[in-house]
Structures are given as C-alpha cells and as structure tokens.
Length: 161
Image (tube, rainbow, N blue to C red):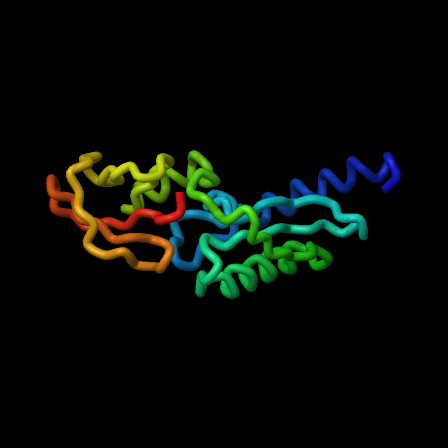
C-alpha cells in the first residue's frame, strides 16, 4: 500500500472500531463486542480491505453466528460493506481482554469478573468472597453459576480467565 493511502486506511479502521463499539453482545446486552474483547483486530489486509478478527468467548459458543451477523449488519449499515470478517481461535478468548468499561458494566449487570485463575470470584453485588459454586454452567455455557453466602444473591462469572 502506498504511503499517501495510509492515513485514509487508518481513518477507515478507526471508523470500523467505532461501529463495532455499538454492537452489543446478544447474551449480555450490557457490553459491546469491543468491550467484551472478542474483537481481536481491525486492520488493513494485503488486499487493501479492512479485516476484523473475532474470537468467541469459547469455541462452542452458540451466540457466535448471531454476533457475526450483528457485526455484519452494523458494518453494512455504516457503509463498511467491504470489511472481511475472520474467526481467530488462537489464542483463545480470555477475560483479561475485557475493557475496563466492560468490566464495570458486567459487574453492574451482576456478572463477576476475575483476572486471576483459581481465585474465588467476588460477589458483584456485595464484594464478598464467601461464595459457593452452584453449577459449572451459568446462564450461558461460558459462565459458571455462584451464590453469595453473605448477601444470598446468585451470580455468574466467566470460566475463561
């Protein structure tokens, strides 16, 4: 790609990022796909088109097709029809990829977010670590279901850290 075209490509990439930030996760409507960290990259490819990499929260995520469809609809609606969507499975998604705003929104929504593997999740309502796992599977397969022994409220937490 020639140097004079670079600024135009960067502007287009930023415009695609802004559009993606409006696409909400269908299972957790409190966060966008950008805040959730499943949009891995937005960059110009060797074919001069913008490529968007998407990593599902886990490889069997049933919402992946819905997310890809919502992303395509948003990009087409914003005039970005030439964007190439790519599935990126390696490395697998991690809750470390959540944005700070996404973490706050998830906790406000009632989903615990931890960064340390093996650490007992903190209740998103009262911050207690006196919790018990109720089920390996929460409201979606990528989350586990817990109950706080302090405030007695149930909550989910992501299994992928």
